[in-house]
Length: 235
Image 1 (tube, rainbow, N blue to C red):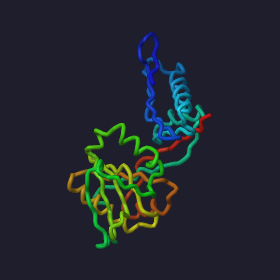
Image 2 (tube, rainbow, N blue to C red):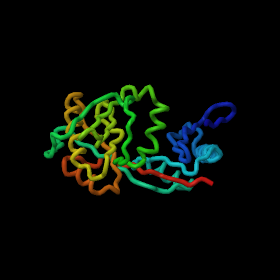
Image 3 (spheres, rainbow, N blue to C red):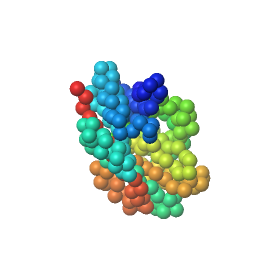
Image 4 (spheres, rainbow, N blue to C red):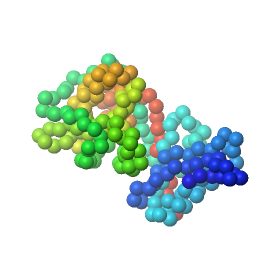
């Protein structure tokens, strides 16, 4: 959805709906047209459109360094629903001791993955991943996935991409107690980061998952950024 002034596009909002939930991917207003209420109008019109087509809740995320945006969304009626730590470590800093030979790890193109398991380290992976893969399908051709199996059952599923860093898009576990499977996945990620000469590995994890956060901190990861998930009920 775009905003126009005198037939000139001066702002836009990109949002999508997945069943009864919607997500704002991006919003921008040209610097010469800011502080005129255009961003507020774009959000209001997008909310009306999404609600008309079945959305009951709308979400968006904001990085911790963007306080101006956070305050803007709060003024529009959004509240903080969750916090994600973007945890990062250099490959040489990661120390994993308890890797079991009972697991088998396969590295495949992410587009070939059909299986879904239900325990994400970052809760909103379930909300955005499916639609992201549809919208950005060309980009996902280069995304990779690690499948960690034990006795033919999938215990962990990791999707990642590599630029300067190895960036983990999502980690799914068969249960939040599947630490062994997570250790196996992290060992594979460490080896891949070395292979690709990546400077670091970044992993998103919900701040509320204390056990997992402490485990990652113990093996060498530190919080590099914080991301807030905001939510608003539509009516």
